[in-house]
Image (tube, rainbow, N blue to C red; front, side, top):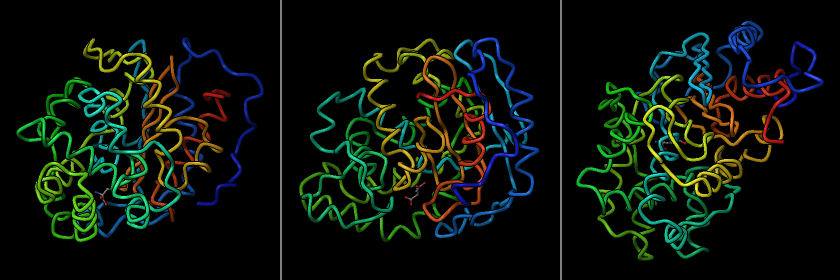
Length: 324
Ligand code: GLU
């Protein structure tokens, strides 16, 4: 998807007041204007089970910190959250270890593909950030060390955050990824060779593939990420997930590292901290106001949802609001 696709409307010249805003007509208009683009991009096929998903799905949901839900299209259809799970896994690991987490994982954008191995050699097995695969494997190692079943702890966590007890992971997707996980397996063993894994690499890979296979809808993901827009407190559960300062820090990491090596271009276009996944989902937050999730399975060359990125760009352009 071209980054310079012009919006079919005049950008908002003065920000619209947020709290009283009804986002439904805006979401519907975005969906309508995106029709010519639906189906563009390429559905991830390196995990064969993901290749079965139709490319022309489109859903989008906004959940505000005062509990209003706005949705359009396939906003209630569950999809494979893939790397969006890295956001929740990192939150749990940050809860457990605090700043000690950063002794094992960095906080810099990688500038390389999400599944790249090259930096690990030069940087002695310390991944650049928790949102690339290498960093996520170290984060999952932290969870495997703490919980009997890391993926179950993560599923319980997103169930609490979203208030949806029916969330789980798709075993077929997990097995499909496990059967094609040579690259992630190599990465885990390589990190282990530098002493940066505490659990066996195969245990970590198994938990990682299952957590990536969690299925959630746009509404559920927006609800689950809302604590980041709300000073670290989940409005759905009332749970203090992180203190306000840690929520700020995690959001900052999403901004700089959450959309693979396209993070710079994505922030330029959208202006929100976000985390994407190769299932075609992107979750983003506007602090103090809302969390938004969009799903459209066709990916651009950097692995981000092509139509999803465009939808978020058009959203912040239309409402005249972003973090800037
Ligand atoms: N399970 C995927 C992988 O490890 C996640 C990638 C992603 O969504 O970025 O390749």
